Length: 320
Image (tube, rainbow, N blue to C red; front, side):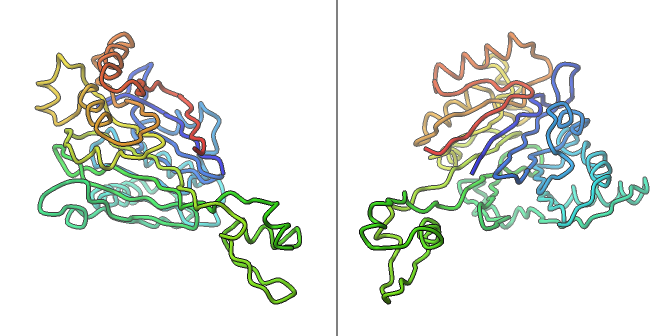
């Protein structure tokens, strides 16, 4: 199964002529999941020639305008194609209210069902500690999405995408030795299912397959101050996409506006176990490309496997 990320934009607060607002499209075996949807996001999707009208899931981190104002246009244009399944939106209650009020006020035509999963602060906080407690908010037969609380000027959530564990490697020589006929029975064993042979024997997948392998993991986190517990959430991730909004010299602005500097994100990553790659995004609109490279340099000095994301960046997430 393919797993790939498209960074649609990397700007925080407001879109720029050369930098769209922060948003990420994750594609898993044909399913499309959009994280955040700021102003003009359908333009960013269109520029990559992606099948954006066939989104399966939209995930919104919080109710600030730069993360939600692209939703009405996206929903409206999605009505131009026939959907056979509902569009699922994971979001704070305020975002649901915003969507429904906008549809009603502007008379937007929607020809498909929208199913909401509302993010509940009380369900994700324990003893006022935002992390590392995570809560399951979506699951299908291939993956799950969990949320966890951040620390911002209003309620904000980060998200963990997790593939379900995969069956172990299939050893055909073991299947032949067990006299399992080629074909359907081999496929069932590869999927982790036991099979019964004509001679009455039951073959367990463990007899012909290696140990179960972990699925891939992606973390998306933006608009928050750093807390040490985030490192636990990041651990064993194949990809972490985390805000690195400010340079070290603008630490005071980060603290006042409850955002994260790039080097602070790197410190969290450095204390996590097994992070394979990490990208910084949600950069302050005050910064030029040169400034963003400085953010990257500050972060790399702490965690070498980090990089600064750019708009339209494609990231392949292979199996390990």
